[in-house]
Image (cartoon, rainbow, N blue to C red; front, top):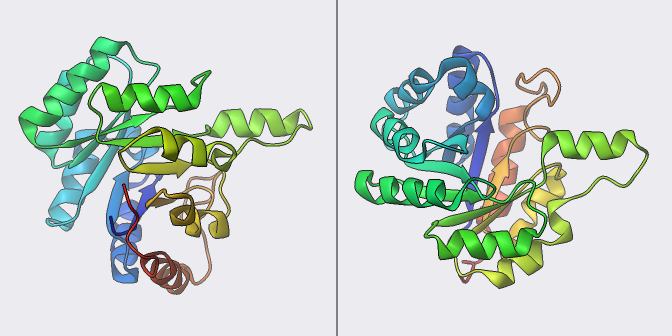
Amino acid sequence: MRPIVQISLDLTDIDEALETAAMAMRAGVDWLEAGTPLILAYGLLGVRELRKAFPETPIVADLKTMDGGYLEAEMMAKAGATHVVVMARAHEETIKCVVNAGRDFGVKVMGDNLGCPDMVEAAKWLEDLGCDYVIHHIGYDERRGIAAQGKRMPSPLDQLKEVVKAVNIPVQAVGGLSLEQAIRCPEFGAPLVVLGAPLTIDADAFKTAGGELEASLRLICERIHAYDHIKI
């Protein structure tokens, strides 16, 4: 598949999220993500506002669903999301419910392996349960907590090749990647490149990073889109 660039709108102000999204679309971003902070702040309204402003753009609702899977996916689908996120550490029935809702309402399901003891097996399990994508994810708190102990910060790149090899669905790597690492994810066979905190968002303030962000994003998108199609 052609590499996809997704920007994570991990913001808590809807106007700033819409401005950042517009800038990202001008720069060549393919998908918009209603990040968890935005969903916590605005819920369905945040997704509806993104859909209203960008009627043809795929929108990922980063719900991190752990329970009530069918209803959460249904609500976000009706609000305009095209993709929803369920956690691998949710109960099997919850994941099945999200997958069923995805089929009923025409949305794709992204399964997130954050916090799983065996992240490769979790990715395989998510695929077996019917997820359309795997998010291979090292969490924000996990990274900061381990770094605060003076230990090496874990990276999704540590096991990315193993995760990609284990599944037959597209993989996205998330969590503490530098810009250069994110850009190179297609080289690992992971065609879904997400740009977010701390790449384009201030990771602590959850506000758009300063500087010539649009020009930088345009160059980033060009580099990622220059990769050949990734075999899945």
